[in-house]
Image 1 (spheres, rainbow, N blue to C red):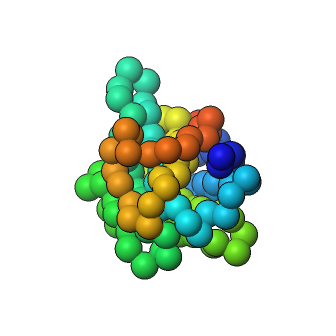
Image 2 (image 1 turned 60 degrees about the horizontal axis):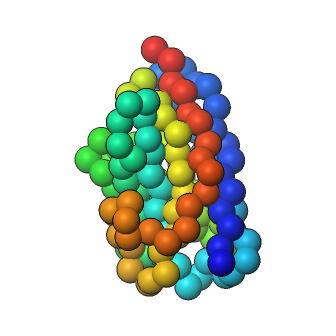
Length: 124
């Protein structure tokens, strides 16, 4: 069992930056691919970034490519999402998720463990 706890969300003006963290306990994260998902009000949860177990391979959705960076520190059992040039449409609850695989996935159903989420609000 893996427990995931997100932190770092908050209110920021458009153009600003935030860094989300996802701390894991219960298992070492080095055995898991990880992902960040977000859910805006009234919309489905969507993948924004993913990373394989080693950190070598990453994925970004078109909407965040060039602005967000996913990274991981397996020694600290933590995954990060650096978000720059934030836009109002980035507003939503951001979830960290773990997959029992070395290879990342971008579908909600492919993930095995979820955090409770952290709210990001970007004002215009």
